[in-house]
Amino acid sequence: MERFKRPRRARSGPSTFLKVLMWILFLPLLLGVYGDWVLQNFVETMPVWLERTLSTMGPLLAILFLIPTLVVYAGQVSFLVFWGVGLVLCIVLWVFAQRGRVARAVSFVPLALIAVAPLAVPAMYGRYDALEVFQAPPGYEVDWLTKPQSLLEGAIRRAQYELDDFHGRCQYRLLGWSGEGVLYYFTENEPWETCNGGDYWMYDAAGGVGPQRIDGPPVDFASSTEVSSGPEHPSGDTSIVAWRGRLVEESVSPDGDMRAAVIQDWSPLHYEVVVLRYTEQ
Image 1 (cartoon, one colour):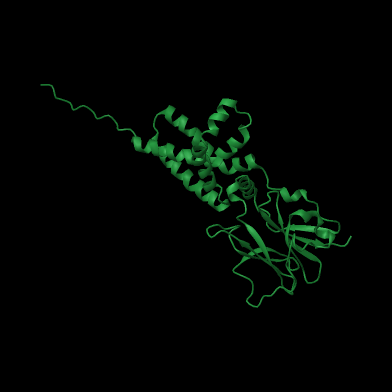
Image 2: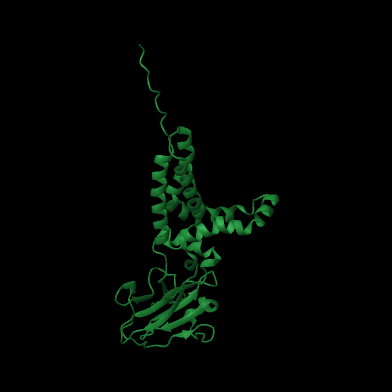
């Protein structure tokens, strides 16, 4: 008598939920990293009909492109956190949600684009070197205190400046100089926003100490020199003439050899801190 064999169960593939979740995760990450750059660089080459179609989809484009971009480019730390967590989740979902060769190959493309994001962002936006085009006045050297410290940080800052929503959030203000020639300054931020990760900074050029975050100036600190406003209190010294139209604040060190200035960058709503050091020639 022939034995009855039970039919083998077909292997259950990955759930539809995992596949959908993977692509839902792909979308905001890809749009956040590449969306704004694609729009900025290809909007002028678009056909007229496509440009008109996109112009009628303003609110939808803001949701799909701008919001993910604002989240991703909130800062270097935020970028790396969102990118790292997103990449790990995408890899896990890609491993468990795709089994067919074709499906794996197709879904590997967005995964690869996400993986190379830290290298792609500097390539897309380039270095943030707007202040480097300003030559130091005769007899002075310029120390750019708020200069980005890495290629990625500089590219992210340039990307931020291309988004109107980021303008004006990092407004640096001078507290003044101590008697020992140490400069103190701080950032006026929106309540939920931080600039460079801290509010108070010190700079000791004479002691060879670069800009450092601090909890706050010394309790007994009082500026030994005046902090003057730019337009209302223009400097009579030619040392600051290169930034005459962009000068926000300035303060001269007690010995007169250094001049700290808050100036506006190429965006009229953003601030940078520089120190001009006098050098004998």
